[in-house]
Amino acid sequence: MLYKKRPSAFVHGPTPKKKKLQFSGNYKKKFQIRLMYLILAAAPGTPLQAN
Image 1 (spheres, rainbow, N blue to C red):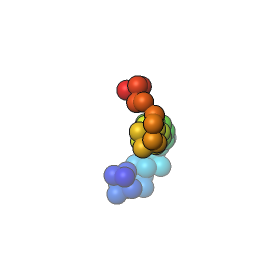
Image 2 (image 1 turned 90 degrees about the horizontal axis):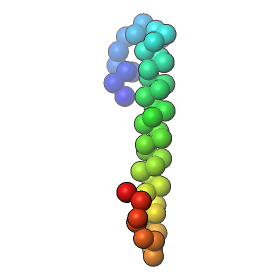
Image 3 (image 1 turned 135 degrees about the vertical axis):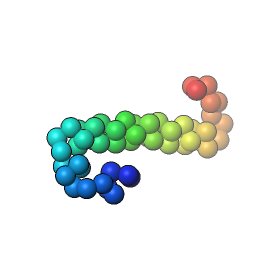
Image 4 (image 1 turned 135 degrees about the horizontal axis):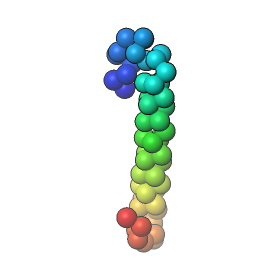
């Protein structure tokens, strides 16, 4: 969360805000996929085929 340390003018600018939202969206998607993989791997008797 580096963007919080930057001045508010940078955060509230139109383009950085857009980039920040896009980045957080991509990060959330990746995190959810990773979490699903972890849950599938932790579940007993499930073959981990998708990689």
